[in-house]
Image 1 (cartoon, rainbow, N blue to C red):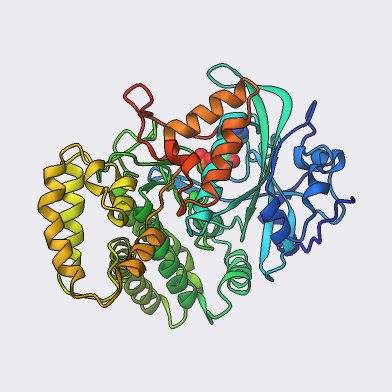
Image 2 (cartoon, rainbow, N blue to C red):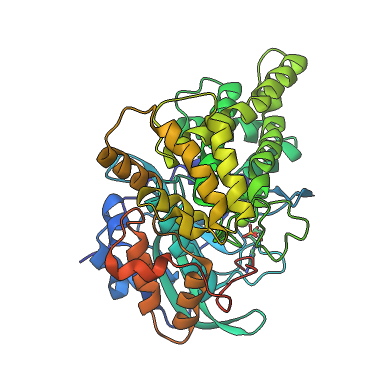
Length: 479
Ligand code: AMP
Ligand code: MG
């Protein structure tokens, strides 16, 4: 049982000013919470070796594995629209990259691994709550079919971190196609570092968008990926919560599970994050914020675009302006599937909007209202079921024009509408129990959420919306 990472560290081969080389800071007493076996296999790693004492040392940052080239990445970003010229991995270290069984290159990063030159006022650590939250939610997103960073492992540190109170420290091993963000491009653009921008662009094209021939094509590809991603978020009621430009991955994966949350009761303006006082990152604002972020990305790429400044601005503007149409098409695809529609009709958008408006007015649980379409229980997800009943004949009439069997439709509806999502109160309960030393609720939740489209009898209680006492009204940044 030797732990061997087949590292090949392409980011570490980029110029020195892209990062600061440093090892994770060792912790007092590592303790294993979880190793993600399925992901370990995908990466070509031995899960047993990861869970061994030697593996635990690596996952806690106490040992640097052979072939790693640990570093903290530099980036910048707009946080809530305000420009911050210097951010960077303040509590994370990239160990290196491995090329998995599927041929895909992925970063292996420790999050909560100690201070770095980019820590600013922070301690470089994470407490158990956000680590478990990211583990649960990012793995759930993956199982829901949504591009996302993953969680390979979680460990405790045996150390206390001080937040509002003293809390148990933890480290998450995050896996991502890369950790390159819009803010990484902004870091170099803001410094007028065209060579850096060029090196980063070439790296990103080779790594993520090999079909792109130039900066404009890269921009177009990233815009398409983000349009599809945000449409998928809306399809499961996901609210990212902190869509700052440093939290938007160029790869098109969901990244940074801080104050994120899934809606129980549907309302388009829902906000959970305690620091999002003006609802900048509300559920229904996410497509607009994506455009805002992509405009920042486009601006960074202007110096690399061909044909002179005016042409570059015109081309970039046109590309960014295509986002709303791309998003709308992706959104329609997601929601058509959620209603079991395989064909395309002009009135579909209106039919979907009508349902969503009624869900908002009728106090419907988002997940159960859609899942309930497959077994006739959708109306039960409404506080005011009459609003659903009035809509239902419209849907039936539309379905009559689809050529499919009832059995095939039911499977299609089940495949498009999850029974299980990581409901906030369940995530909260899992964290509270773990703080007291009981990992069972965490294990149960992660296990159930690995198959969110399949409802086993024993998981029925996980589909229930929170009771009044269980409702989580606010979520907090994962610091
Ligand atoms: P986030 O809100 O997670 O997107 O983080 C924003 C910035 O704050 C990033 O540069 C993080 O590395 C940094 N940061 C967040 N939490 C900590 C912490 N506990 N210690 C040091 N830096 C942190
Ligand atoms: Mg971040």
